[in-house]
Length: 198
Image (cartoon, rainbow, N blue to C red; front, top):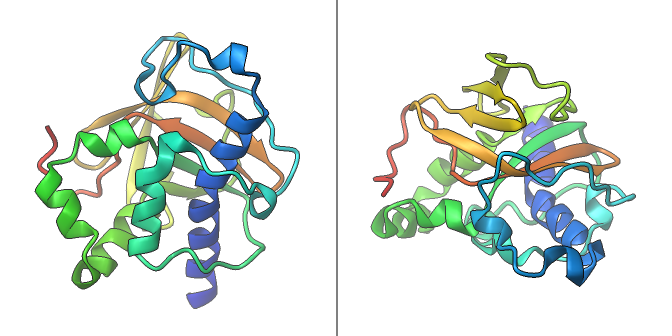
């Protein structure tokens, strides 16, 4: 059980670096005028590869700095190098901004480390799920133990959490050698955790 926990912590933590590594390899022209943290188009950016495992993706994504802070607050940054494959749904800064500021600040406190760890684990699923392999109404079990439901309509891919909130993928299929990352626009919530979302 302890080993399993280290594996998902590693993947979730380095998902931030993976997304950052992808952005660092994308040409400035491709990103000009586009704020990926708030993109809600029906055709999310997909299919980018880091050509390395998650540990080798050193750059950090400016669109996922709140996720990185959450990982640090949860003491999940000292991680193993192996594990997976995993699929990670990585919330952007804009996703965290939807959470009530007082609730988010409370989650970041040392006294709430366990609750924050459970929230982060709710964003990780065992296995490699690309946009093409995810099916409409498919149920995914997270490493936290909760359920997520996939919603697909045309080119739009969304994930519904246990609380009934829907998170849309705004950058999908970011591929590392030991996992897949989908950047999402809303923090996914286990049913027992309330965030006072705006």
